[in-house]
Picture 1 (tube, rainbow, N blue to C red):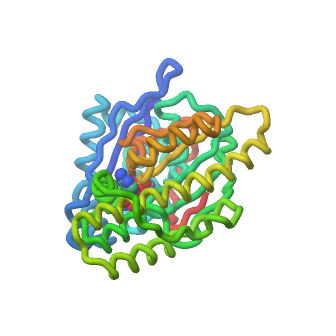
Picture 2 (cartoon, protein in one colour):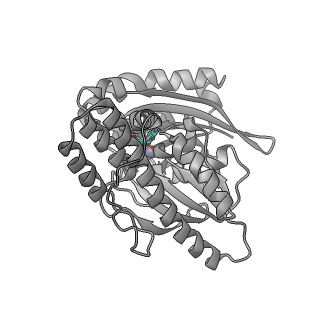
Picture 3 (cartoon, rainbow, N blue to C red):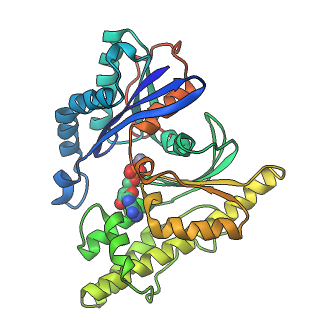
Length: 338
Ligand code: KG4
Ligand code: ZN
């Protein structure tokens, strides 16, 4: 089976070909155009601009994905596109193009939940079996989830306000160090010293929920108190990352305890997914965390952490076969929950 996947839920225009052949699933191409240059001067993603860019690029990106994967439209058995959550305009472009291809080659279209794409993304590279614990950290969501099996996800906790990626982006904006914020904070933090104490909302709440808006305010207070030297910005970034690590570790420990209670005889498989999981400081420290907590950690390659279409095609391949009924009546769901 050959699947064409399309991802347009935010500011990445992406397409991918995934093949299931001789019992093996393989990503043949994973093409992406990141629109950050178009959004940079606004310090965040502008939905109308993202929409227009998707319109401009989507056909070229799909053709590139087909060429790189050495496939033609006639080889495709299933067409998948992100159906939500995300920006409505982008979702509309991706699903409409996918439906049009589906109609023209007479193969089924399936909408995919973007969060499920992230959750299953480690299975692209790793032989990861269910159940597993997921720390999902993106620009729009922050959750601890137990993935019981494909299609069955139990949310243990989630953010009550900002998502973690959003907090990275907002703090970077406060410091005026550029967009997207995550990679910039990571860069500045490398040279900084974590010598500033920031608030850690909900750290002692004894549940798996998060809150990052108070942390952002705590950064804002320090920033407006001090002069904004490069050294100061580096220390703020290092301290911010350190605080984040502390919060994520504390909540992950609680979630692992719940996991262990539910599955006392199973291996403790723990995955971190989403754009923030590409942060090297967090990746390095979570390796230590895994050793300490006796669990097996899986973090996808960076290209599968940030938004990509391979995870969408992959999820479609895991969930459906090519006999799936066509889903041409589907309408984008900007707030689609898992
Ligand atoms: O998963 P993703 O690509 O898109 C969403 O589904 O939202 O996540 C994007 C988020 C952005 O907020 C971005 O700043 C953050 O991931 N991010 C990072 C890093 N790279 C991307 N955050 C921290 N460190 C990074 N290296
Ligand atoms: Zn995402």
